[in-house]
Amino acid sequence: MRIRIRACFGGVAAGLTTVLLASTASAAPAPGTPGVGDPYYPGDGNGGYDVTHYDIRLSYQPDVDGLSGTTTILATAETELSSFNLDFALDIDSVRVNNRPAQVERDASDPTEVVVTPAVPLAEGSPMTVVVRYADTPSQVTVDGRTAWKLTDTGALAVDEPHIAEWWFPSNDHPTDKATYDVSVEVPDDIVALSNGVLSSRSKVREGWTRWNWRSTQPQATYLTFLAVGDYDVRASTAPNGMPVVNAYDTGLGSIRPAAEASVERTPEVVEFLEEVFGPYPFEAQGGVVTNGLGFALENQTRSVYDARFFSQGTNMSVVVHENAHQWFGDSVSLERWSDIWLNEGFATYAEYLWSEHIGEGTADELAQYLYDSIPADHEFWQVLPGDPGADDQFHSAVYDRGALAVHALRTTVGDEVFFELLRTWLEEKRDSHGTIDEFVALAEELSGTQLDELFEEWLFTKGKPEAAPGGEAARTTSSGPVAEPKSYAEIAFTHELLAAHH
Image (cartoon, rainbow, N blue to C red; front, side, top):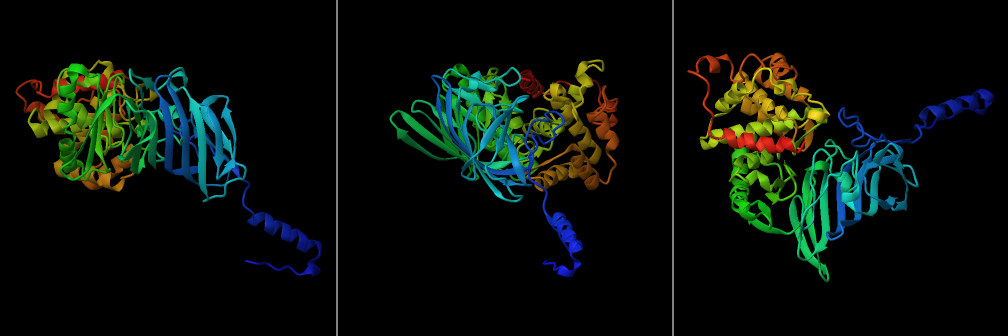
């Protein structure tokens, strides 16, 4: 609106004009925050912008562990920015913002915080194209005394939780800022480069080198974006529903290979079962990678990665069910803060119980009761709180196992009809987003018409062994004695031992 002030007001008019201009002018651009305020990892993520897409184009030389290339980040400024941060630990050659060279500095107190000052401040709502060129030896880069980049006999693995992106691409590294991805990696002809989503193309780019191009079309968290380079047998197929399936097996698996294949090749069957429980599979591809040298398993979006040891005792469907259940609980619906980890691990573990019911190797009630009876009240297991375990105990066995007992206690309290409606409603409403335990509890109370604070407080937030078994008093008093060990229990326990050992 134009405001006209008559000249006859003299000095008063001039003063009023100054006030009006000052009141309508926007605040000066400010730096984006170096973290999103996660209570466990305050430096994770960055404030002031939202990423929509990462285009990661790299070359990897396994003989010297040399990684080089460019990551292009498409984002939107959420406020006026004089500068912003990226989470990244490798050496940077240059950064350009909207095609202009930008100033780059590292935070002296945190080597993963890269402060980027564009040549021109960014307006609120404006698009950002950030191009980062870099080259380094990832295995030689440490953060807090460790590297998450893992060398193998034939290549390397960029697979870890909660942090891995810092060792191979610059990012806004927190699960609340998801994006789509193109991952293109050039490697020697005799090895392969595996990542998430669909293999859009593979081509020979120069003598002795092949480029692998992967595309993820659904929103994906940074820690769920992976790279596996090495000597793998790649098996591509099509699931009964027409979805592409890509599985890969380290050629050095030896005698473990048949058990690994007999487990991972059943991924489409597992997905079909989980769809009956959770609702439609949320992504565009399925599969798994079995490797040496990882030490754990991780639910990378569309393509989980498993250490070979999970199959050292034979087929292991528990770990395949667990990691694929994360495609819903953890990948499609991510945690809002890392203290909400129960929403990932408690439900992925409970999916193993449901699979056991499905194949007739022990009901969820039998598994929950047996576990509850097996752990003495004075065991330290009962001192870890699944609802807020702390960063040091984030992947403690109690988060998995007591977390699953909490899920079963909820099921027996609200009944099967409400329980399974709750799971499907939560996953549908939060798809491609993130959630908190408080939000889940609120939805559970809404759908059940029952006040559930006491149940969740006892199972998730109170130290000590709950007095009532997860199946309720009825389950305890009607039993003629201790529940016999369900057939599936040993496999589940072995799986969880390996899952927790890494952390």
